[in-house]
Image (cartoon, rainbow, N blue to C red; front, top):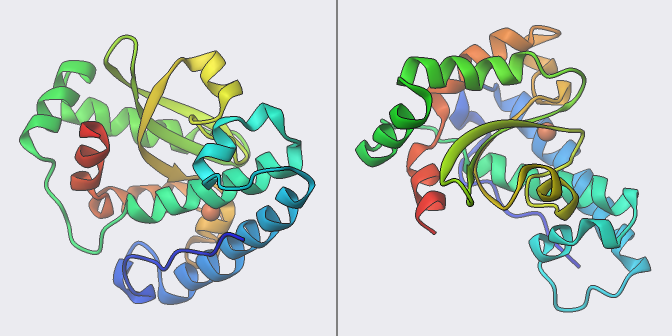
Amino acid sequence: MFILKKLPYEYRDLIPLFSEKQLETHYLKHHKTYCDNFNKSILDFDVEGKSVLEIINDASKYNQTLINHGGGFWNHEFFWESLSPDKKEIPENLKLKLINNFGSLDVFKEELLNSAKTLFGSGWTWLILNKKTDKLEIIQTKNQDSPVMDFIKDKIGENIPLLNLDVWEHAYYIDYLNKRLDYLDNIWDKINWEKVVERLNN
Ligand code: FE
C-alpha cells in the first residue's frame, strides 16, 4: 500500500502561484485520488517489493487504469518537489547547460512555457535530459503519461526527467478559472532549480 507523501511546504507557501485552497484541493483531492486508485489498480498484479517508479517504468506490462493512476501519483510527487516557496536562482552550471542547449535563458523560458501553453487537452510539459545525446529537451506527455514509462521511452529515448509542469485544468481552475496562460506566467518564479540540478547530477 502506497501512501501520499507529505508536501514539502504548507498549502499557503506557494502564494501567489496557488492560493491555499487551490493547492489543498489539488493535493488532497486530485493527487490523493490518484494514490487511492493506484493502490486499487495494483491489486490485480504482482508488484510486491516494487516502488511506484519501478512499477511505472514497466508501464506496458500493466493496464491503462494502472498507467493512469500510477502516472498521476508519481508525476504529482515529482511536480511538488519541482516547486519552491522561495524564488531560486538558476545555479551557474545549469545556466550554462541551458544556454548551450537553447541558445539563451530567455529562449529556454519561452520554449518551456510555450510548450505548456500550447499543450492540447490535459497533460504535462517536461524538461528532460536525453541520455544518449546528453542534450536537454522539452517534451509534452498526454494525460498522466510520464517520460519514465517504457512506452514513452520507446519514442523519446532513455532520459532523466528534470522538471515538470502540470497542465491539467485541475492545477489552476480555482485561482485562474480557464486562464491557463496566467497560471503559467506565475509558475516561473516558483521553480526549484536546485532540485533540477540535483536530478541532473544523480
Ligand atoms: Fe495535477
